[in-house]
Image (cartoon, rainbow, N blue to C red; front, side, top):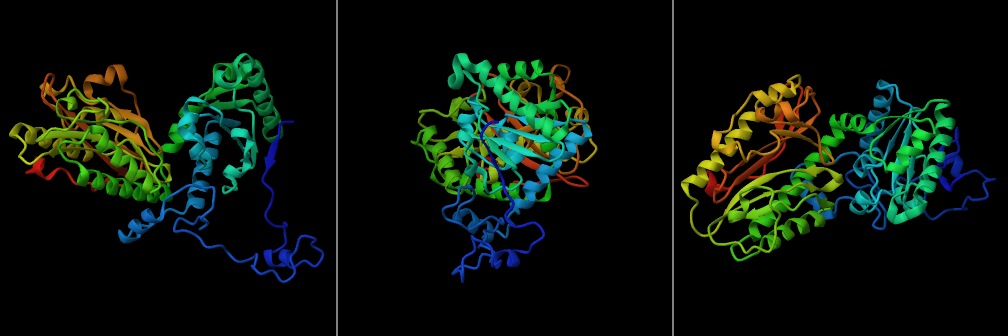
Length: 465
């Protein structure tokens, strides 16, 4: 059997903590201990241990202080973890599945609330997570290092052996995949008997072939997890509020320092710095551009020097505190002059677009209705429209992606909004061959009877004038 670290009970079943600690025949008891073992350790505002040397990452004192000053409530992370775990188990039951096997780093984060070299893991899949329908959760970790996740008691086992990508295993890839699947079969036998209906999200070819050869009925794990992750619980909403506040504070710092003569990279580096200082994690893209490079959209920031009286547009795509994605877009006028009327009109149109479309958001509205209704772009801006009118958001950009009417036949799909979902509403305004472009985006929470705009980041005062 592969090396496995089992989480052991922290106390004797049926015995209170005080009785356990004072058992006279306990060979590990400490006579007259200096530290009361029954005393609860100091906790941080999100109900995690206040241990300066802890392994668990998270917000910094700077972030906690800013949230307290803003009157924000932190999430209760153990409660949030339990909510997510329960959502996965409910999804398994609803789909008549025996287990879900995860390789996507963000779905592993959802299931375990653990991280380990997330970006490296995104292209070197060394981590995996199996959750069986009886609630047994196994995490395959780099080197089998159980200490990396010891703060989450929902994880029952930590193992090694989920790496079967070429860099790690080369010509032994099939051998390693077969050994990994042997572990899966053993776990399924232990926890679900003869059940072999397993949802799998993303797996290397050798792993998929090994599962097929072993008689596992591979189901769509990506769909299961996207729908599971879509409905946010109360503490996930609190986590997102905190993450958005930290992101907005980071944007404000970036704006204060931005001036002509800086490079685009100089500006973008300030957002990275401010995010990391608050306990954020990474930024998915580098979409910030200035002047002519704002049109067409999606050009990444580079060494271009910002001129006087130019447009700067950006999309944060920021993975912030608690691993929550804060996806805000703004356009600024940089310089000592005034924007042109054309630039103001473009900004006004972009704002009208997202505000009007946000008003559509409510439980029960279909994706097709969101596509067909709302604000329609003038003809000259349709060729360079943004890829989506709305998209889901949580730990990253998530399901659904709701398209413009012109894209429905090729890229649209059916669905219905539910309370607890989070959406981004956005617009890009820039005509083909134009000198610049405007990008705006806000984040919305679908409430019981409508929506809440979770973003308070100001729009550019000069472009709004």
